[in-house]
Every structure is written in structure tokens, then in C-alpha cells.
Length: 622
Image 1 (spheres, rainbow, N blue to C red):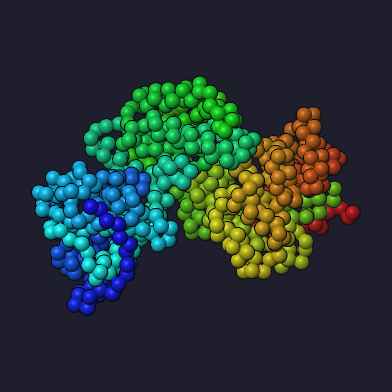
Image 2 (cartoon, rainbow, N blue to C red; image 1 turned 30 degrees about the vertical axis):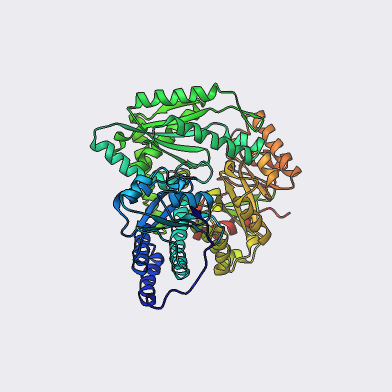
């Protein structure tokens, strides 16, 4: 006969109070220190058997993902019974432990020999002379979710006395504390290692597991390749149909990729619409597998919530043996190959060759030198004036990154910026440049003017939680008015109309900062971006100004951009002016602001006030 009882809290018998208090203290210390759950449950089970010597104790952890009981803590329960309980699936005839979790209530079985819940395990109980059992589910006090089971096994027919029920409640409480702490820690660990959207591994898991996998393959003489996988035209799909459907598309792709890989092959979402996979096989075999996947996806008629979507992939592939099993090098090289796949028309796989290996190795050398420059504050900011094209009067300046003399000789500043963004150095570099802009705007020769200092701002910086606070701390440190600083947004293709980056930009504008859209007219720096964000200025890219003397098309484009800017209520600055003829054409068109070598090349920051004063002395009075 099976009886259901309600659990009741009662003070333990004073005879065992001392042992209980001492054991409880040790168990709580284990929980606080984050010791492994099994050892903690073992300690609780042993303490329970000390206080209830007639019972044998099993404490099991419930994994809702696998829907089974595992990670057991046991006292002196026979080994074969312990093994039978490991992996037990809850059900209506799963012994007292599995049945109590199935019913979600305590279960007392006075006679194992006749109770139907023991139908499948009766022989095992008879072998060990188990006659009565008592199992109680461990429930989270936070949300009532099932954490595990506390089970008691008796070698004589037994029905618990009232005092014993109080003791059991006490041990259930201890086991609940331990299992809930483990569940929280397990969830935090899962979140740290797992991509929340797709359920695949994330960058942390990729970094942690890849070394182990690569070392094992190397020791066994097996070949493994790294694939960098990028979903084509994802940003366009996201823009047209919204983030909700974009997320659905990424989930679908993650599922399809996982289906094509073996369980021992590693797949991770690297970021955005990018995935990285470690795949067994030589490059030819792996490329054939990837091309087959791409062909299947491209030919698949797919609907995402009634929206038709076409999945095509650009992929870069590298044999990990070619980079001595260095994950970061392999990712950089495969990423570069992916970019070449996109430039070659998308929907294809590019294999990294020896020339590309040399190219990426050169980038790594630059990255190492650049890291030293940034970490040791060896930057030497240069300033270039921005002038009124009619009068020649300086109205501001742009601060540009340069390393100190003798460092990174022969490497262009733009190449350094690209590498800084790819390696994450842009956060430190950008902050140093921003503080340099604060410093020069507070210079005695400039602080009494209304001149604005422009400084580049990468979207990577906007994504950092601390960025806004660092910006404001700098203002207080240098006593600068935010109206004196204009932040030029680069890499505008990564701007999202909603989200963290947009929130930070709005907060900066509210505080008084000015915003400029850099490289207007190229790539993603378009009218769509201009209309969606609170920009004050637009900078027309140098490529349009270069040919303005000889190309009617270039002149037409400049006029169109001027009209678009004015229609949106923003100021327009022409970059890269090098001749008087270019200045005159732009001025006659209606451009008011300009920047370029005609007025001054970029000069070291300490020389900038003098150059601005010289330009002011030559300016034509309005």
C-alpha cells in the first residue's frame, strides 16, 4: 500500500542535536564554498544515517533537461542500488524516488514486496532485504521547481514516527539548499558557455574546448579544419523584417549546422551571424561537406513565420595544422578567407592558401606592436583643422591617431585602426584618443574659442557598458564642456536603430555632445543611417572630392549629398581638399566646411594651437 503524507517541520530530538548541529555547520560551509554537489549530498546522507541509524539514505539531483535523476549522494546504501538509482527516469512505477517526483509529492511505501510502484525493481530490493521506503521531492522555495529527491530505505517494515518526520524535514531542507545552489551555479556556467539565442557554444566554450580538441587530434595524427561561417545578407534581412525574425533565422541556421556535424565536432556562435566549427577531415573533404550544406540550404524553400528567406553562406576554411594549432590565428585567417568569399560574390567557400597565411602573419606582427603602443600609452595624436571654406577661418579640428615616432614605421594609421577593431584594442585606443581631445580642447589658446574638437568613435566602444561613465569621468577630469566635443561615428554599418549603441548615443547627445557621421556616401554610411540617428554633422568622404575637378558625376554626387544633409538639418564637411580648385568648386556649390592638406596636414597635438592661430590670421574677414 502506498501512502501520501504531508511534510511537517519539527525540532529534532535533543539526543542527536549535538551531532546534527556540528554536521550541519560543515555542510553549510561546503555549500558556501561551492564544493561539488555529490560530495555535499554524500555528507548530508551520512549525517542523516547517523541521526537515523535504522535508515539507508539516497539523495538524488534532478536534471530537467535530461528528465532523469543523477549526481547522487549516498550513505551506506548498497552499491548495486546506487547504480540502479543513477539515471532513473521519473514515472508512475519508478520505485519510491521516481514515483514521488512523478507525483510531485512525498511517497511512503510500507511493503515493497506488494507495492506496484516497485514492479520493475522488486528483485533488487529483495536481494538487499529492503522492505519499506520513503521518498520526498526536493522543491525550490523560489519557484516550486523540482530539484531532486530525498529517499530513505529500511530493511524492516517501517512507518515513520512523528519525531522522525521532523528529522527528515531538516535533512530535506539541507539538501534543498545544496541542490538549489548547484542549480544556480550550473545555470550561470551554462550561460557563460552557451549562446543564449541558438543554444550552441559561445566564444568562451570555443576557446576553452578547442585546445583540448586540437591537442587530441594532433596526438592521434588526425586532421581537423576550422570553418568560419557567415550568413549572407543577414543585416538586410534584419533591417527589412526586424530582429525577431532575424533571431529565428539564426536559430534555424544553428540547428541546420549542428545537424550536419558529428557530436565530437565543435560548433559555436562566434557573434552576430558568424559561426565557427572545428570539423574532422582534410580540407578537401571538409570543403565538400560545407559546399553540400550550402547547396542544400540555398535550394531549400524556407519560410520564417510566413516570410520567405534564402539562406546562403560565405565560408572560410583552414587546416589547423597550418597554424600550429593556434586557435586565434586560425580564426583570423578563416575570417579573412570568408571576407574574400563575400567579395567574390558570396555563397561560396574559400580555402586559406600560403599567401593568405603570410598576410595574416604580418597582421599579427602589427597587432602585437599596436598592443604595446596602446598598453604603454605610446600614441601621438595629430590634429587637422576644419575651416570655413568661404573665409578660411578655422572652426574646429579633427584629432587623428598616430603612434609615436619610430613605432609601427611604414604601417598606415587606418590599417592600425582596422587591426585595433579586429583585436579589441579599439576600446583602449579610442578612450585614449577621446581623453586627448578633452585635453586639447582645454588648451589655453582654444578654451576661449568656440572651436569644436572632433574625435573618432567606433561602434565597438558604444557596446561597452562602462563607456558612457568613462566619457563623463573624462569631462570632469579635464573640465570640458561636452558641446566642445564632436564624436565621429565610424563603422556605421554596425549601428542598430534600437539597442545599447543607440541608447548610448542618445544619452551623449542629451548631455551636449555633437555627433558626426563619417565617410558619408560610402558603404553603409547612407541616408538611412543619417535619418535614423541624431547626427549634427556629416563628413563627405575624400573619394568624392578627389575627382571633383574632372568628373561631373563626382560633382553631382557632392551636390546631392549636400542637399540631403541640408534636408535632414545637419552641417556638411568635405574631407580631403588638396587644391584651391577643389575648395572653390565646393564653396560655390554651398559647402561651408572643409578639411584637407590645402589648409594643413595633420600636425602633432602640441603644434595644433599654433597652426589654428596661423590660419585665423590669414582668414578673410566676413
